[in-house]
Length: 81
Image (cartoon, rainbow, N blue to C red; front, side):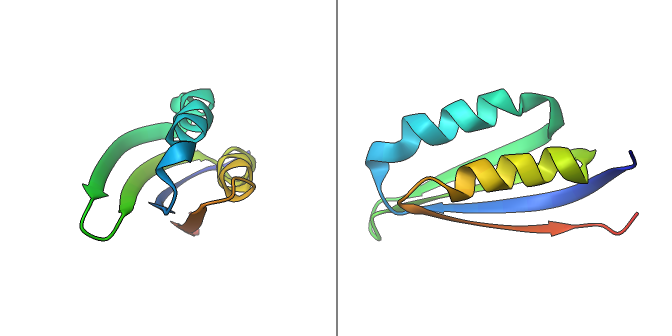
């Protein structure tokens, strides 16, 4: 299957779920090229951006598992090639 490059944005609204999020990211570490996390304490949120390189199945698995965690929002933008 063809690999694609993309960006995954995660907004964490509940700091109690950070361990769950990190576990999911660790499970998909092979497709994560880069990661930037910014705690925005004044707003009570944390924002994580990921650069990913993997098959659509791999990327969808990551975003799908993250999407099942209550207390966060996840969105992705993936290249067509």
